[in-house]
Image (cartoon, rainbow, N blue to C red; front, side):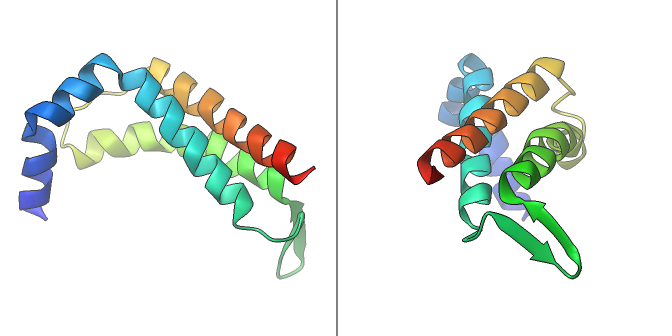
Length: 109
């Protein structure tokens, strides 16, 4: 685990890509993640025990709101403070996630 962390954070190519296109990377990753999240449900209505929810609403709540914010906090913990909290990353995460849910909605209709 330690070796993996060192490889990712010290890889010069990885650092070059993410330093110049950081916001684009956040946008694309969250778009893809949200699209996958919504597409994993076969039915439009998701039932868990007695609760029912629309899969698109779940996508917006879980991916766009929860994951986009908590990922910023998590990366500062995982990187042991090497990465800092960035509001612009959250904005890119949020809009990328909304686009991913929107694309999934468009494809299903």
